[in-house]
Image (cartoon, rainbow, N blue to C red):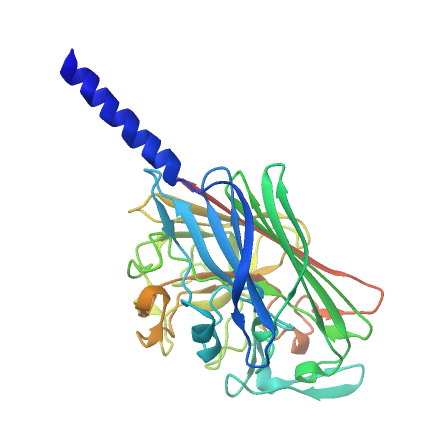
Length: 374
């Protein structure tokens, strides 16, 4: 009986070691660094009862890390990002950041509201992108509230965008809440009010690779998007105003399809997905809109949103030059984004759902990324 007992003892010790290594649920905060003007940036670490861990910095509300278990319970960081504050300040393609005041593109950086024409920064020639040269992703947010316990960890961030910031009208007060639940959900709730009519379209720009941020491309991930239509664009990625069917196009993800299956059929430079889908269901109501799975790790991500659209981006502009965590060089297709949103250039397309927020009204938007493994 000695050998079986010895083997059992070894197994129990191994299990105990794994249990000791599992992160403890809760929330901690520590300094992350300082901006060039001396403003402090903090890092919050949230861990749920399953060991799922999210790290968030107050610069841009950036999610720097997201550790998830695979089918064997092994944790891996599934979000692309930088190693430290200096690398984020050197420039990055919106890794894990809150984007606004208007996410996505505005044609030629111009729009008219209340009879007045506004001219914005051209930071993605010939268009305006993700709020301008110093959008919400480059602002330091303030901790508004935090909660630890009762089945979730919560961090709520606040930012006030002054009238005229990045040439947008009105002072906009924004509150964004990140919840990490014991159901392995990352819930994001957005809220905003203004004192003057202004366009608002907020989103989270996380780049996911469910096999792990340093594991190569996402071309073998299986993608499903609950959309029968999309908004075709011109060569600068501005929607033409048309609503087209995905049927018989490389943009059809109505059934689980490898991201790389039809990517070479797309006529774009660089080649890949970077388009808005017109989602099924009623905008304003939280509903399932996408599912992505990684066949190697078994990780699955299901997305719910109250928004009318989602931008699917397959990391086309990544080129191996962007320095990532641990010195990893992120090559093309190293991560994908599902940016829940109103349609791009909606401020200039009256046929699209409006992005104008009026005084006395409240902008609200909820998105849930729910993770599992099988």
